Image (tube, rainbow, N blue to C red):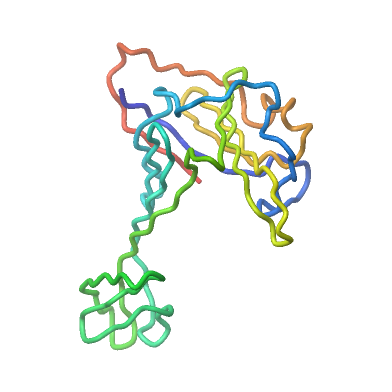
Length: 202
């Protein structure tokens, strides 16, 4: 069944904070919540960004974000690993893989090319844990900091009506304030409803 959804990503902290500095949890959160072996079926599917630039695919064991968008760039300011010869642009990645495409020339100095990127938003593996509590889902990832210290990075996810929201949990107290931060989980799309186009927003 398809669902019409919107996806958002914020930091769950008071005031101004950076999403790049997660709370250093010593254990996966919430501590007493059960661990899920797969991502629930009600969350699985394909979510199209409202800006049309990316898609969030949720599978039983992974969440993968796919970016598809056009880039306008001056010919002499292409990123590293991008080589333009005539109308053909070759893009090399870190593994040596290359992709070629035909670009559009807006004028003598500016071109338009297409980007297709993959982002592993969350993957169930030995270094990650998915938990559920009171309708909220917690994406726990065991990561290594710059100081070689291992911590748990925690994100909370909730589905309410037409909104799929994910927030970083940067404050242990935020676990008790989730209804105020991201709303109350509620799936209001009965099976008998006509399938709707899925969407998400960042």
